[in-house]
Length: 158
Image (tube, rainbow, N blue to C red; front, side, top):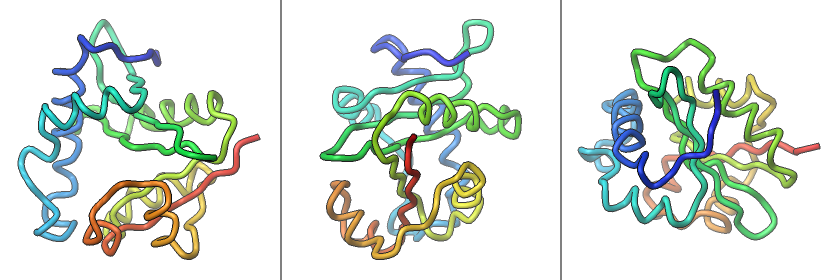
C-alpha cells in the first residue's frame, strides 16, 4: 500500500534511494556519481522541502517517491525501489498514486543515459520535453553538469 512517509522513515528511505540508485552506477557520467548517491544529511534537507510517499508491505518500505510543488508545476524528485523488489509494479503504483493526487502538470528529470527510466515514465504517459534545459533551470536547483546530462519529461494532469 502507498502511505505518506514520516521523519522516522528516513533510514528506510535512505537505504531504498541508495540501493535503487546503484542502477545508475557506470551509466551516468562518472563525475556525477558519488557514494552514497544521496547522503543522509541531503535526504534530511530534502524531506523538509518535499513530500515522500512509500510503498509498504508487511511493515517494510520497499519503494519511495518524492514530489515537490514548484511554481505552477509539481516535480517528481525521487522514484526508487529496492533492487530485489523491482519489476513488481511498485514504481508504477507510486506513480499512479502521484498522478491521482496532483492537479498540476507533473515534471520529472532523469539522466539521459538512463533509458530504462525514460521508458518507465513514457509508458505512464510522460513525454520528453523540448527545450529541456529551460525546464531544468526554471524548476530544479541542480548543477549545470547535471542539466547537460539529463532530460525532462512532462505529464498533463486531468
